[in-house]
Image 1 (tube, rainbow, N blue to C red):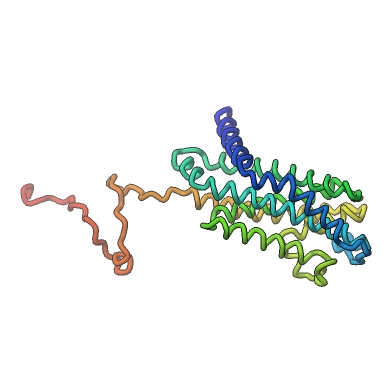
Image 2: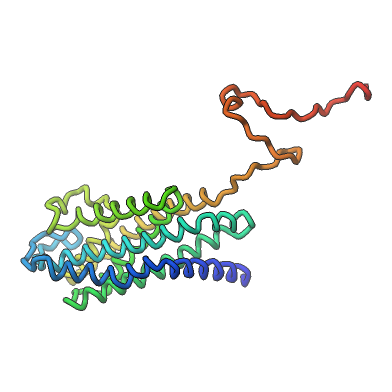
Length: 290
């Protein structure tokens, strides 16, 4: 038990050090979140934006800048968490693979990434909630923080998927930004006229947006929508686990039954089904033994 704990602690410490070394991500955490939610509150019109909230069935008319600030906060935490997990997975992929090939348990590596994701998501959700509470007070601030936390978890797991499967950093960053922007923007009633469309219910942060909006302007708890968001997290975490398993697999040639390394097939061999490499000697009797 102590050995497993030491392995998990070592891997977690390594992941946290990698996050701390990512200075750009740390700058995003400190400055991007309060700047973005603050600019939304100051620049958007405070005119009432009537709409029907699906999660509670209530007809609400909150100020447009407050409503947009909530979706902006969801956008912030998903982008930052996704970027952090993508960066640490992309840059540390080769090292993780070497560790796995050297015998380091992949289970402990996965659990370490999960621990760092949970910690980062909790801090970002609390920070974003506190930034919004400076301007106005949501009716359920703890529910708001929980909704942001679940959204951050989902996109953090998605960052692991992108970091494990994509071969270039710019591809992962573009995929992360566009996914989050499209996902959250389509659910904002101030910006999108089809925010209540049935299609939006299939978006990755639908549960968090519904729960965070209810937390801001209603006193009705909506645990079902938090559970829906956790289902999205479970699905993306499963994809991340499979992608991480694929990336850290042993791609070296495996020994044959006779203890020799199996020679690689040439493209011509693959197409004809033949083998042009050296053949093993026949194990039958030779002329001298006949």
